[in-house]
Image 1 (tube, helix red, strand yellow):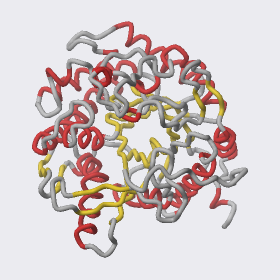
Image 2 (image 1 turned 180 degrees about the vertical axis):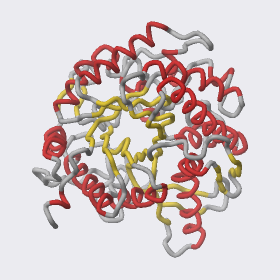
Image 3 (image 1 turned 90 degrees about the horizontal axis):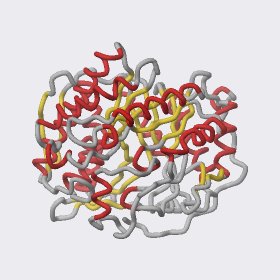
Image 4 (image 1 turned 135 degrees about the vertical axis):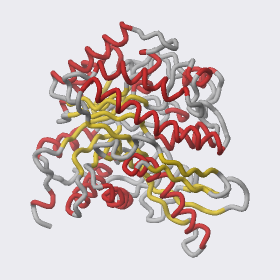
Length: 441
């Protein structure tokens, strides 16, 4: 392979990603209520102070620049900004503005997510996503967010992983708001698209121009039984609904979802066509799908077919699917940003190899004409991992959850070497196989 094939262009961005609830601490929102209701995998677990990024953000910006990052993804916490419907907290708005300005001054381009799963406590009671009032509620919030972004040249993400929010919160009832209703899922999905359009209008009105997209969790899908026609059909339907429905709606203006026996919709959304400037991809793993003869007719598995060892959270290490996902989004003809990619590696030994194999797929995608502009590693820090609580560790920096001390993992050296040289260097050692928590989750 030529030297050029191992080199990232000079304008390629290496960065890191976080989200407010998972790192800031001291947030009262729908997830805090969910925890108090005992609905995590360990009922007594609380996010609480998280890793106190709210007070240690300047230290954490320094950690990001120390590994060669030039972009830093955060989310704005709606519950801080609008703790009561219609009342906006001036102190919180000023604090976020200060953080963004200091980020920019440190040479870190802000990548700002408006909605990363969480909501103010009032939202699901007063303006839930399956009701039209949700769109105006998000519009008013986005208007305040637009004020924070003036002069920053931020990359903006309206929604992080909307399909995860919908499947978990509206179809399975596993996360807030805890609904399990296919028809309401589709209404909520339509309103999320409309809310994206509304946020775009507010951002353009204030900023004049904006680079706006969504971050879509993208899975590589495979049939659990390669020979079974219904497993193969599920792969086609699942990939279209899960990976592409939102992106297609924001490029074509047409929202089309077909999940037979579960939920479907066909609707044109005014203003949605060409409402994104980039495609955001979050990639972690591959899932094997099996048809089962009972609702929701699908069984979801992670398998270690090649013997690489499942990651510590139980996901398949499948970098090949990263290239597959990037090639599939080439169809939209837009720049691509990898807004999340990472591994739960609790010993800290596999992450350099994971980075190497996945960054190799980014270069392969670029050689095939996919316009990948940047790579944001998830995450800068170990943090609170939603239903999983404090077990998983995705951070470049290990965090002692008692003392909150940040310590570099071996991946910091590897990330820095690639980000500063712009070359795909080999990791110092091969990764050991992980323990096998289970073959399916």
